[in-house]
Length: 283
Ligand SMILES: C[S@@+](CC[C@H](N)C(=O)[O-])C[C@H]1O[C@@H](n2cnc3c(N)ncnc32)[C@H](O)[C@@H]1O
Image (cartoon, rainbow, N blue to C red; front, side, top):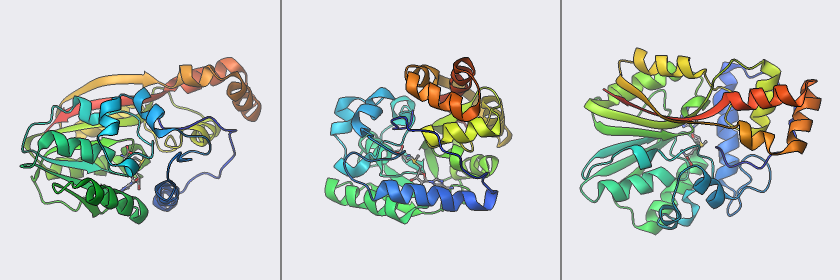
């Protein structure tokens, strides 16, 4: 789950594909420039608590540079990636670098980690963390996840945390990952998907809440896009619905229901469809 304290849903215009990158970049530039209790989705965000809730241990969070975790992930891909010593690991949409730094510890000095992000402010934050933390086996490259700045067959493992849902062209991202992985290389990602198609107004309202739902695919389409890129052994590691988090907040449900002109039961059903997914696949 993204690091978000619920806030009132607000109407927003439908996104054109061409606008998506600019909107996403603006949002994460703002997150990157915010320190401490980062208001990643609006108000009162507590990155450490939010990250523990999605699978990071207190020890992991204490072991990385202070600014590496703005609290915008939705899972902990390194926990299930079975990283081996000496591997070359790529993190798509590396943000403040949280997963790069954890991967760097796991792969050790003979391995390397490449974080890729399109947002200058995030790259600056991550590079500062690498410098301050003495991570000589980590580099951060500017680029789009749809056009990876990587050689063919150069990575052992590609990870990503709550990023691919933001891409306007997810099938292309998976094709790029396939190209950049060595034969036998792994893809291990956390991301947001939906388990039922949501009406557009609902999707926009939930977007105001979770921040990374606007482009979320149906889970079946997401897994199909991974297979269509050429991957085999596509395996769902975990699925966690946002439903109980939303329905636990009666004020939030009432606000969603009022905005959408519906009842609490419908809000609960739609929130339940928004799911944090961890998936593994092999080239
Ligand atoms: C939700 S944040 C996740 C950051 C990090 N993975 C984490 O868990 O803390 C999304 C990040 O992906 C980057 N991003 C989004 N879309 C991208 C794209 N198409 N190409 C490159 N980077 C992208 C954003 O700049 C942002 O830093």
